[in-house]
Image (tube, rainbow, N blue to C red; front, side, top):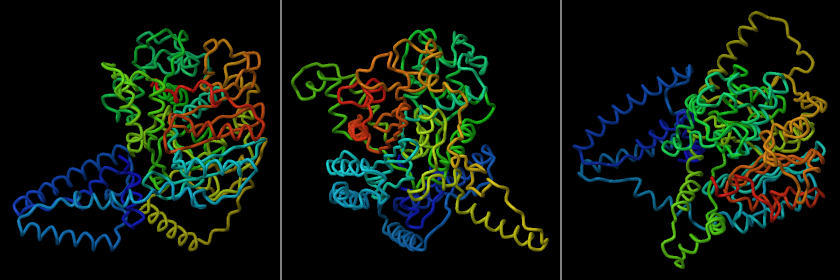
Length: 615
């Protein structure tokens, strides 16, 4: 399912296939490597190929009509001469096979050579012993130097494939490190602008959007959901409020779960997902029980956001955070075509999973080793199936492109850390960092395809000629207005450290469910209003004023901030584990800075819901 890595590899060879049409692009490769068959079968196969091509073209046309885009129909953007020669050789062999009346399965012939190349040597440990394993960026602090030593050690032990860590203290970047490779079989280095799938760390951004809207007066946190979203007012949900959704007390934790088990790709259909959640039946009365809404949280918030603003979810995301924070091209909920070369591929740390399984299912662990007879392994098998499928499913471009506001964020650590650095100060945007290359915010948020870029260049050339003929006077640029990449703001508010994205002085209380918001959350619950509360170990409720808050995702990626110490950190990983690497990093960084370690990341602390096997 990891089309992105394969199509990116083809692109490096010069064969540029359309990333926005992954299924059609992959069908092109299937034609290249189709089997050689006897002459009679070959004629029939060619007829079927022609028929399939007509059907594919029709599907593409329908897709483009639906999306109202006039993009080229051809799934190929560029074709290298080497590939032409290679395909001609294949065709000659195919013709020879047909004449000899034999069948040749090329993929079976090529598979052992490809596997031996991928498996040759221990790529990961060799890279971890190489000084280039940590991407060459400036060291910002002593703690970053010590952190890099820890990363090398963890890399040699194969606990890390690829990772990014970024941290802010008092509005300044003190850590911005990238290390490892983009995937288990992708040796390209992780860079500061690489994009990682962060699973439920996405929820922290989605929750922030709802608070941003409340701060702007577009909704109230105590509004009933149905007053904003009329279709929601059925099946006993009339009393459900926005605060219940944010606090995981809406009673809709199982909405869509059974449907997704049967068809995971239903998650890709935004409208259907929103509509199904709107008609779902709650399992408990609003506000009565706090149950983690692992997926439904995103569609509930997404439905509220779109109905309250009358705008698309991604438009609101860009308006609220992407442009003001100048993190263009480095934080998405549903990636656009054109960023695939920067994607990290997910894989699972099976050793860590087995350790976690032994802890949560000790009887089953013993049964597997032959010491207990007749143990029920049903629950264990279900968990194994779900966890094992996650990297496969979430590596697929169909899923990566989907808007799943609870679980499908793709970002760099430096973008996520900048977001939390802004939340730490109540909305004041920190100064723009300038040390890492490429600079944060320098990417186009909605990239153009090569074919579209050529058209644009031609159009610009024609426009320039017309302008020269007209001899129009040179225009001056107004102060604070700059030419920015597509999708960025006309001015950069990050240049002014006093610019704030929130107006309310007590916004931290709103995030955490403290002060005047105390009665809006479940008593002694682990969640505030959308964010996970992260008190330090042994802290009492009376000490929980401005405590740390944030959100982690299954696999180890996380982002949080500590307003008391004006500190934020984000960690992105592509080897999914149960948080061991993340905890070690946070413990080191907080200890070196003299900051309290959130209990969730301490050795004996209770793990968050995404780090447990109770999916």
